[in-house]
Image 1: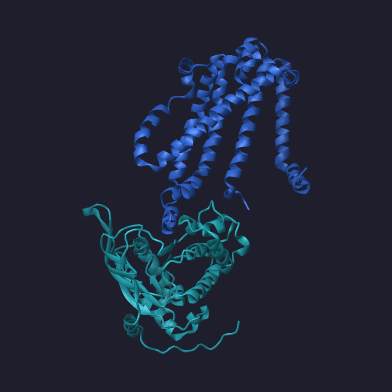
Image 2 (image 1 turned 90 degrees about the horizontal axis):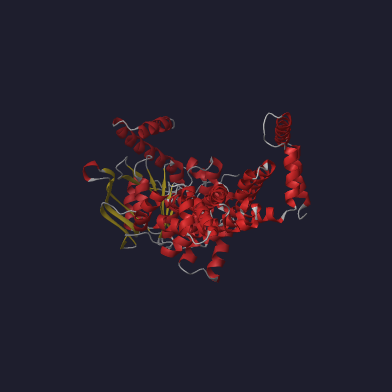
Length: 304
Length: 272
């Protein structure tokens, strides 16, 4: 593969560009002072505390944080499967009280219905709303081709590879034309090669549609490759620790993340933030944090 | 043959495998030992050669086949009734907490009572002996079906509900397209277990009840269970063994049939 010279983005500091971007975009999702606790009053475990952030319309916002930091809880709150203990979540100005097709969630592991073929899975949403007519069928066929599953329309999920399952799920979500796509570590568990292909594929898909996207991951390279904006989370209870703008030009390629100086700068910032967070919880004897430090402390020192 | 190449290929694979021949040798050795033990007179169990001769005679006897028909009918009618009542009941218990809270305690009180303990009561309470026996086979299959349906419906991954609701599905649509298909594999399991119990139960029920209304057909008219009992009373030991083998075959045919139906009902579980 030939490496093309990259159009160089200007070099503002990430913090400065964060401020600038905040003024000229529209918030699709607004999370304000949200807290979530589980369990009875005196034994309550707070998983999310006073968490506030916005997700801009037409942009791809990535949330990154140590595992077990409460990211999945935030996703369930955004999806409307659970209600926050306090605070408000608004989507398109409306308060979230229940699941709705304006925001669709892609779970960590496949939630394709195993008893339906790829085609029937994709047609699930339209049929649920009694819109399964010729128009929907045509769109389903188009989407199947778009995600490269045209020849697999009659296959059941277990007959598809991990990457294919993820693409079928993307198609199943997209046919409902959600305002917001919410993805919870969607490429976790895929082998390294498939994961890279899916990341490139997903970036392309996003660049074509520019649908508002909230993408949760623990993978820093994935975050930088995909994001317009990165929310770095604290350890549990989850809050936003920092917001970083990623002004890499689109369309992006995976090499960009390795070669681009801006990308590497952001990576260093994210790593040191996450490292700090992990150190904090390590001091409290968290096993997850210990693992995290083990995995990342070597990486953070290497480039310097 | 419809697909000669595929079929003969699979047949060849089976016949060529060590596993297959090990099974054949073991069976032959077993039958040979049985023959020797009987011939030498260590045991009063009739020799396999004698059993085969009796089997041959009975094949030409319509009343033997009528026993088959009676037992099959009792098992399958009881079993179908169990499916018909058990599947909706299990689903309702899985879906509604209120219904579960009301019905399950009663169900759990009755469940430990072995179906065979119902035989005398069934004979008293049902108008015909035929219905009494079917009621007992019904009970045998019923508990297995209900328990499996409840467990299966409850084990459906919560993410399927979440995904369905996100896409605008609710109520009846979720029941029809998530709960129902999600429970089918467990229904198949419940059915397979249930029909096995129904066979175990029908034999004993026929022995106890004296073969039901068809007793007038003579000894061989009361179902396979009664056929065995009657052969014992009449001192025909070879017929006892033929009856035992017949029930084995009948049970196997029923299970194979259900397995096939189960595969058709769950195409997504098939390999490849």
